[in-house]
Amino acid sequence: MYDFTVINEALLTWYVTHARKLPWREQKDPYRVWVSEIMLQQTRVEVVKEYYLRFLKALPDVEHLAYASEEQLLKLWEGLGYYSRVRNMKKAAITILEEYEKKMPASYEQLQKLAGIGSYTAAAVASMAFQIPVAAVDGNLMRVAARLSADFSDTTSPRVKKEFENVLTRSMDKEHPGEWNQAMMDLGATVCIPGGRPRCEECPLRSFCTAFHDGCMQELPIKSKKTKQSRKDMTVLVFTCKELFAIQKRPDKGLLAGLWEFPVIEGHLTLSEIEECLGRYGTIAQIGLLGKARHVFSHVIWDMIGYKIEWDKPPDFMGHPADILQDKKMDLTKLIWKTKQEIEENYGVASALSAYKKQVWKDAIH
Ligand code: SF4
Image (spheres, rainbow, N blue to C red):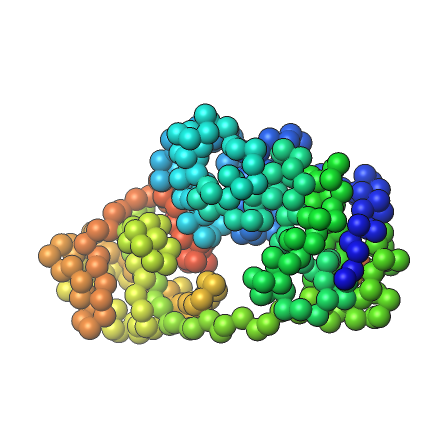
């Protein structure tokens, strides 16, 4: 078994001069660490910085988060995806208020009982905010550890992840657990990088690295193939009427639950199909093709085609709840009409549709 304790001194020495300067590291505050870690599970560090600062400004502590409205949360999260994560944060914030006297619990085990907090996030908060020695094992740490020990186990296996969590927690520097985790994360993000050749010539752990010694760095970590995503053709209908756009709220359950969208329907509709189906509900001034776009979710890929449909006045879809487009199910009875500015300020439109939003915003006045 590889002895990970040998890396601690070199790792922490390297970290003193190479730590990334990140806004959530300025204070060792559990709420800040929590917010940043959940956001970092969604996207790149550079993107998170902006979201993080905006989120903290609007919701500076657990109490504000617990009382935030669904609309505000979705707006702050717009573009990050996986909206269930921010909904879980609110649930957890309510639990913290009710059961932990408004303070995040300083316990790795109790943190994991909060909604949406798994072993990684609990370890990150526990180690960085409370100096509790537990390794925060995410993709970065798994990669670095698999290479250091030249371990060819499948890192997507929960059993293997648990083993890495145990061995790294036993081996990490117990005096500086927060710094140790952050150092490993930074090393994984900037030196022992994924996809392609790691920068071993810059690595402070090179002399301890079995994969470097054996020349198999690029073969690691092992990840078994993910299940293939299914593909769906979708048509996006952007209804406009003068300076107004029509949006509707998606159902509370399922994909993009509770988010706002331009109406979306399964299948690729042709221009004449749209004209024939919708022309019954009002006078269409013009239909324009917005082109194709693709959005990749975790389990499904949407191959979209979009149309901009300009109406003389907002059509009346009332009384036609579910089958407006003949055999295709589409409920347009709950559409609301808003300006670009109103939508931007108050409604979190699903980022899956952002390609179309960008296109139609270009021509919008307000
Ligand atoms: Fe990663 Fe190379 Fe460093 Fe090994 S020597 S930990 S493979 S960067």
